[in-house]
Every structure is written in structure tokens, then in C-alpha cells.
Length: 446
Image 1 (cartoon, helix red, strand yellow):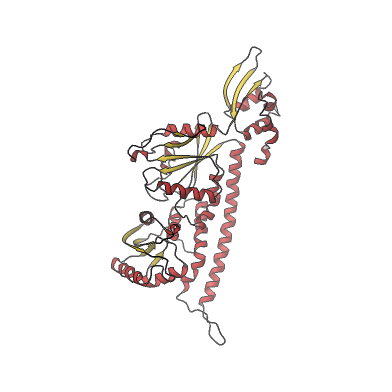
Image 2 (cartoon, rainbow, N blue to C red):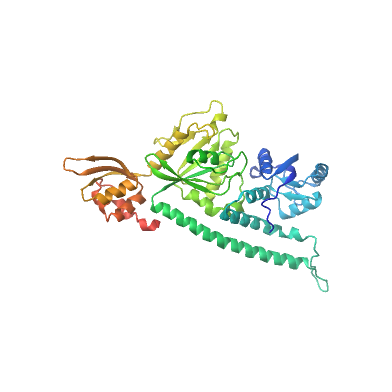
């Protein structure tokens, strides 16, 4: 497959078809922004209503003639449909228009190809593109003679070439999957290392262009590329931040989601998106100024379900609150007093302290809090607890014993107990906590 990562759309005609089916309704304004993100310039837009797509051309012969005339008048290079086209429809439309025809899925794949920077990202995008093009491979050889069935009929080279290309395509897909498995194992090793070190992971998720990367840069002092465009960044970025009462925490910036994200793309990016499923907390970034923010939240939740991250604790972060008149300022808590919604502005810095405090509070909710009483000979355990940033307060009694108030995850309890040869469970004064050390097998995490 040719490399089209640097390909630009040029002058583009947009076709938006309104269908009764709710799942086929797409946002025209979003399509325009996608075209701009791919380097295209929308020169004309056609909007039509249909009860059902035409099997051969999706929009019917009358509209095909109108669009073809516009393509010629505008000297357009591309026609983009805001719906999914079948391979036959795409082939028929290209023949009628004389230019390249793309559906919404192909457009998103093109943008991803343009944005991918890391080795893993490029592999993931190429895999999604190849899987998408498998059914469309035939259109590349329509200029060649086709074999005909029946006795005594002379065959042509076209069918043989298609089969050769299909075989090459399958081999390339298999090779990419093997390479991605190696990258996925490396990513899993890094995740296990963070678990062994009891480092919390906070993953940024949200609809594309919600301001995730800008907010990520503001909180981490990072320089991840951020721009007012769809899918400005693709490759995940991890940075370490020290949170009050929690200690060392990894913030992970992930790819933005979009309504009806192509299944091939979700499958190809599964190892990357699994970072969200393995996270201790999701910061769901929402563009507070977007009139379709509720629909966008549902679209993101749908993708999170697909990657197994639906049950991860989530904090809704309404970004760009400075663009909303009379926007709320106070953090919203649930009935247990745990933050569930905050309002911030990555641009002005408003609400960022509240955001970090809310994230720390949720992460602390995962901690086990108890007290240990140490003898002077328990210096190693005391060092391990301080090294894990688990000590909240310390006091001495009249007998010279050290009373430490600690809070740390169950995984860390097990790890420290093993490293101290059972000293943590021995010195713990809470009767209800020792089961953590016996029942929670830290080796299972490794």
C-alpha cells in the first residue's frame, strides 16, 4: 500500500446525507473540521435527505450528476462523504466524478496517518489502513483485463495481479500484528513495573479537540504538540507529577476520540488504549463550550466500553470554562464526598489547583489507612514506608515506640510486607487489615 501520510486533500467537495437512522447521523461542521485537519479546502457542500442509501451510488443518479458538475466547476481533487460507503459505491462514484472519493472512515484514517510520529503509532495506523483497504483492493486494478469464466475463453492478467496483491496485503498485516505484539509486551512490562513501584496512573481521555494536550502541558510543564484542530496529537505521552498526599503519579495523554470511531482503528490502537483500562483514574476532558458536549461524552464512554475501561474511576473535567458565560466554578461531589466534576480552563489556569486536589482525593480513596507501631529495631520498615510516601504523621510514645499513620494501596501493602519479611503486618494495630497481606498476592501482579 502506498504511503499517503503526507497526502493532502486539496480542493474538496463535501456530501452530507441525512438519513432517518440515528446511527448514520453525523455532524456536518465536524466533517468540515476533519477535512481542514487533513489539509483540505472545502469548496462546496451538498446536503440531501434520503430514506435509505442508494445501493450503487448512495445518493442517487440525480445527485451524482449535480456533484459531478460541481467537481468539474471547482476543479476539485477529492469528494468526501460524511457517511460510510461500500466498496462498490466508492468505486462507482469515483468513476462518475473522475476524482478520488473518500468516506468519513477513510478521512479519519488519513488524518491518523498524517499525525502518527512514533514507531508504534505508524504501525497501528498502517494496520488500520490495510484492514480497511482489503475489501477495496480491486479498484486499483480496474484498468486491467479481467479473467472470464467458461470453456474456451481467454483469461487476462487482472485477476492474477489482484490475488498477488491480496497475498502481499495479508502477509504485511500479519507482519505488522507480530511487531505490535512485541510493542504491546513492552508496554505491559512498563505497566507492571509501575504497579510494582505502586505508582498511580492518571489517564487523560476525551473527545478530540477538547483541550487534553493543552491541559496536559499546563499540569505537567510539558511541551506536547497542541493545536486547535481535530486529532492534533496521536501518540500517547507519559509524564511524572507529584500529587499532594499521593506522591509520584504518572499522567498519560492519549489519542482523542470521535463519534463512530472506525472499528479497525480501535482494534489497531487497542494496546495503546489499554493504558486507559489499566489506569487508576480517568480524567474525562470535555469541551464546556461545545453545544454537543453531552453527545461527545456518550461517544467517549462508548469507546471506553470497547477497550474495557468503563469501570475505571472517572473525573469529568469541563475544560474551556472561560468561554462559557456564567460557567459553574465549584467542584461537584457525589454523596460520599468524592469529586465527580470540576470546571477548569487550561488556557487561563483557572481551576487547575482544584483539579489536582480532586484527582488526589479520588486516588486517596483507593488507599488503605492504618497505624503501625515500630520498635527501634524496625528501622528498615520505617525507611520503606517513607520511601513509598505513605507516612502521613509520626509521633513517639513514652516508651520510645514510633507511631506512624500511613496510607497506601493494597498492592503496596503486600510489597512492603514482603520486603520487610512480615514486619508491616506484625506492627499493624488495625485488626481488620492483616487480611490484605495474606490474601492479596503481590506476585500475581508481576
